[in-house]
Image (tube, rainbow, N blue to C red; front, side, top):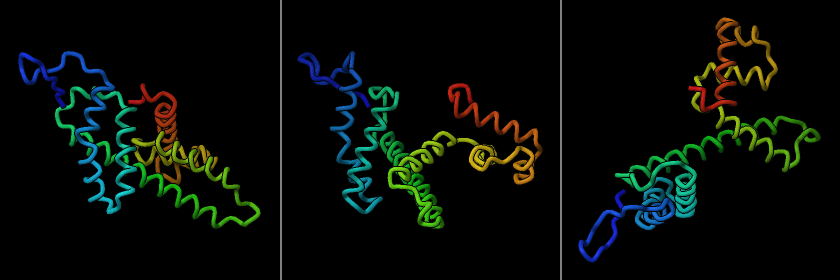
Length: 183
């Protein structure tokens, strides 16, 4: 996205220093309407499209992308919006699985609405933290941490060696606690 300035000597001159705020404002002014329309065609609901468009711009603000250097802003916004929608669907899937599990609990053991909200947020954060790990690494970590299974039990369940489970656990822990060194 090349932001231009109007100058007396030339109608369009590239701006020498565009602040991140100016770049975001320009991106929003130029493409927000288009993004809402694009989202509405996919979602079929204007309210949801407006919410996802706003969430997309929030994600853009949180990113460290140099907005003044984006050459294809609509492709960029489409990619970010697809990720926002995918995250929303994943959260909804986690919430549905959690609520299904709660429905199996006897009424006196059911958590309060506040406890449910905290558990749901924790589950979503855990899902976000484990995103990008191979399925067996995720499974090993979850069985060890949530189910309290021993490495030997996990190895039998996943049909791998105990040393593989140890490697999976080390990788998952690095990924969660030291994401900058996980790769």
